[in-house]
Every structure is written in structure tokens, then in C-alpha cells.
Length: 187
Ligand code: DGI
Ligand code: FE
Ligand code: FE
Image (cartoon, rainbow, N blue to C red; front, top):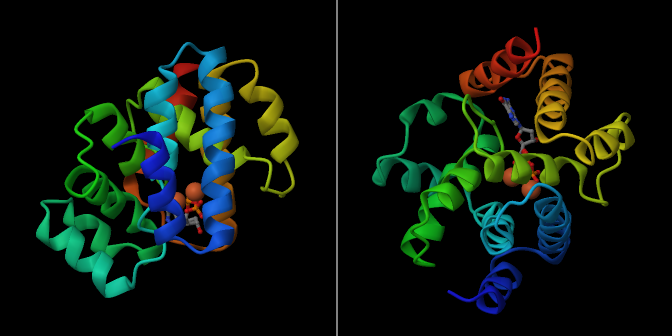
């Protein structure tokens, strides 16, 4: 599916505020892609698809996960996580996207994981720092993102976990493994 067609799918499937977020993530991610020599087209496709399932009903997301061989652990964790793996299924089955790196970038954009590719990190970071985000510390994350993809991923996953822990939210194990990997790397 062409980029222009994907943009129309985003507009069709998401409310305008969410679609605007997706387009800002695509702009942020493609800018970072040139900095870190990641394939521009893959980055743009992954960014446009990352929240494609965000507006689906909870029951629909649950059945997509159940019916497509997705890790069932997601279903014991908060439903806010489900749109990421469900988006992977839509990208693959409805948009015909077969590139594993793009599919993984969609799958892990919410939780992160151990062993992320540069494309996966880039989408995770762009989702957090796109210009519409406004939270204490976002300016620091934007600066770090200009300097090092690994430092930015470390700072981003740390920020996300601190935010979740402050709310006493349950933490998906992949997020903890991602965090541990990034703090171990720099010891
Ligand atoms: O879809 P977005 O709003 O652009 O951003 P996202 O996909 O990164 O996050 C969606 C929601 O999921 C957000 O409210 C934070 C939450 N979240 C991310 N990781 C975890 C999580 N919630 C829980 N409980 N546990 C996690 O590990
Ligand atoms: Fe998301
Ligand atoms: Fe997003």
C-alpha cells in the first residue's frame, strides 16, 4: 500500500485529533531517521500504522489478539496496550505489510522490549516526543533524541516506567526488560 493510501486509512480509521498525532509522529520519526540513517520509507510506514487500531472497541481488540496468534499475556494487562499488537495484525492482513521490522515497530511501540532495532526505537521515541506532547521532561528527551538513539531510548523508557509507577499501573514485562537492557548497557 502506498504512503498516500496509508494516510487516507489513518484519516478514515481515527478521530481527527488522533490522526493529527499520527502525522506528527511520522514527521518526527522521519526527521530522526535521516539523523540515524534508518530507511525513511520504512519509518514513515511504521509511524503511519503505529496507532491504526487505537479507536477500536476493547472487545474487537481482544478478538484480534485471540484470533491471530498474538502473545496472550497482553490480555492479562491493561487494554491500553492492546492497540499495538492489534495494529500489527491490521498492517499485515489489511494493508499487506510484510516487513518484519515495520511490524515489530508497530507491535512494540507502546511497551518497548529487549533487543529493539533502530527502527523500533525510533518509533517508540517519536511517539513520546512528537511536538504535540507536553509533559515535564519532554524538552530533555527531545534534546537527547538529537544526540544518541540509545541514550534517548534509555531516557524514554525510564520516563515511561516512572510515569506508570507513579500511577501504580501494572508494568508489562517487556517494558521492564527494555529498561534493564538499557541501564545494563551503560554500566
Ligand atoms: O497510543 P499513544 O497514546 O500514542 O501512546 P502509547 O501507545 O505509547 O501508550 C498508550 C497507553 O499505554 C498510555 O496511556 C501508556 C500506557 N502504557 C504503556 N506501557 C504500559 C502502559 N500501561 C500499563 N499499564 N503498563 C505498561 O507497561
Ligand atoms: Fe499507541
Ligand atoms: Fe501514538
